[in-house]
Image (spheres, rainbow, N blue to C red):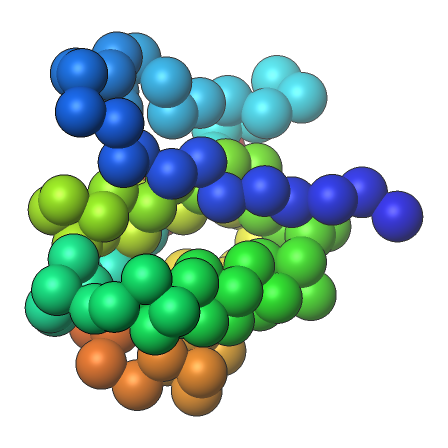
Length: 114
C-alpha cells in the first residue's frame, strides 16, 4: 500500500514556493487542486496540533489512490491538496477531512478538465 505523507511547511527558513512544488500533471494528465483553511491551527498546543495532523494524514491515506500531493502550511493555517481528476473528489475529500477536523473550511478548488 502506498503511503501518502503530508509535507509540513513549519521551517523557519523560507521554503520553495508552492507553485513550484505542487504538481500540475500526474501520469500525463492534469491534476485538480483544493485548498482548506484551518483557523487557529498555529495556535494549538503541540499535542493538539499533532492530533489534527494525524487526523488529516489518516483521511489522505484512506484516499491514497486519488491524492497526488499534500502540503500543510502551519504558519498560514492552509492545507493544499492535489488530486487525480476524479469526478467529485474535490468535494468528497474535503468533506471527509471536515469530519475529523470540523473547523477546516474549503476555500478554493481548481478542477482542470482534460
